[in-house]
Image (cartoon, rainbow, N blue to C red; front, side):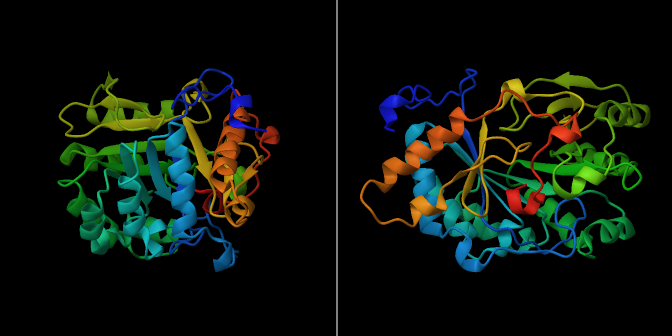
Length: 336
């Protein structure tokens, strides 16, 4: 198979077989994390051998070929990406690649405050901070850690210096009321608070989500009627609302109750070095064997694997029908 056989690439533009432009790659650089959120990395945790994680050189080779094909936006995820000592140098190297317009980071925020300076120096464009509650006891129960103060301090440090989004997964019977307090961050700071319907992947298949329609109604009852905000606010699928007097925005990622697949622009690279066309399904395209094969033509083989993953993207996920979700790995193994 050669590049000329694949119709999804048209002169630095990737389109899947449904006409969606693919320009966003999420890179999981580790499956390890310093928290144990039950829907993401429940105990007992099982991690890849260190040698199975892609090296910085391998990650950059993938991103270089992805950029060559037209992907211009990259996000480092995990696990917790800031566990990896070379996270900032990876960001700096990505920012130097031709054609790259945006490099962002998703983190739980525990280590963000102490590493913020080096990340900004590296050229980080934006950060998403995962925070499921503002209540210390609830935070400890969800995450297995008492690091809430460190996360809130990181938000205060980061908010004046780069675009910040706060991500909260709303779980029935666990943190249903947490959005009311989290919304005050968007009220008081120019940050976006994004409320995510729990996706039935891995351990989360046994848990129950709360429809975002219900979450928005509770927020409007507390803070006043919201107005839709259709400005572009990054690469994600959130629908944004402006509540009266808020400095930031409320975002709703309604993965289960309001499918947004027709706008999907992403691929994922798992910590194991697999390209994943869709979060819902177990199908992957392995890259690690290609990256560790020194035979000539490795760069073209990487590009062909990326094109194969683009061609394999399904029309839509089936999160609303859990029995059809074939992905059984944890979110930390896949890449959040």
